[in-house]
Length: 195
Length: 195
DNA sequence: GATCTATTACCGAACGTTCGGTATTCAAGA
DNA sequence: TCTTGAATACCGAACGTTCGGTAATAGATC
Image 1 (tube, each protein chain N blue to C red):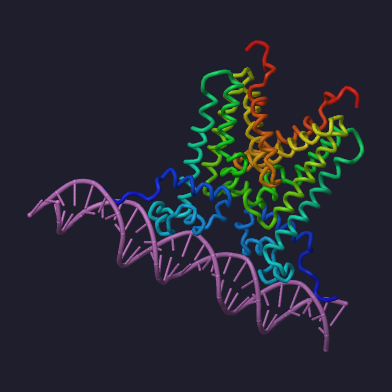
Image 2 (image 1 turned 90 degrees about the horizontal axis):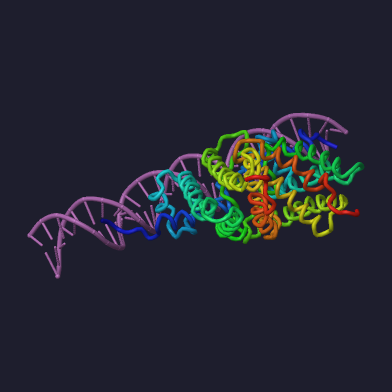
């Protein structure tokens, strides 16, 4: 071919994701993105002809895929539901850097009444997360509508934990959210009598 | 004495708060803030000589005080704990516009490793919220450390509900969080045998 | 009661800076 | 050599901010 890239696509998207996570879309300037990636602004435009918006879109898609590989896939693995929930919690802990990293979905969400550029991607990612949680809850014996509620509750708790951990400068809420994941999705006390 | 203000301080801070809530600090441009307030950029600088940063600081303090009056004060009112929790939930629903408005604390939080301009105010506001919840839980019969955990859980659930409601374009998570407030802080099943 | 003065709120226009984005040149491999 | 990725230099636009001046009110003076 020709001159090789000085940073691989995956590594580049991870570096960029950190900036978007920490500063949000508006707060992530090209100067920040360039510094974090080790490339210059013009080089970023070579990789992402669509500019900053394309960067955020690809970062969002890549992060969603990484979350799948790191945590959600473990929910459908082998073993008892509570063990799977525990393994997924470890993956989530790694993905969110022990609660230190804000959720990209939160940082890229547009105001409710408006339609930002990422609404569809963000909604799809949230939906996939909730659905994965709900599937485990149903497998653990919950009725379909109850499983959905439990999946939503787990996602809410997780993201609330991230918000509080960041705002309060304490990882306690995040730790609490992780340990609650198992109880919410696959409680020790069976959810149904016959399941 | 002199010319009266064309918009009162409280009303002005509320208008500005909506912009900061919807767009965050970086995303809230002076053009947005001026349009939302009905004042020109220069007039905003007359009211807030410290500029955009002072606007956000005063907005944060004012919003915290309004949340106190609208919801937290109801937690220490009269009546049974579960009734107080229900009334506070109504106040929270009004404050967050039925889950449509993002939390200012979330939008103004700085990355964990950095120290943004609002870290102290944000942390104090979160702490006050959790403490108010914990006080009610303790009054409802929870042991001190359990009450603190319940207060944190309630705050996490609430903010997670706001995040998911915004990202998923559905008010269901927020509604779920509000109805869970009562169960978390003042459950129907007593927390202690003798309380 | 009309006029003047002091004081405050507001606004139009511009400031320097930084923004996202682009054109061009340079250099590294195949 | 020829292709391609990165760097330098640059652009118009928008950013937050500042400043000079105008509009509007209350009290003082006549």
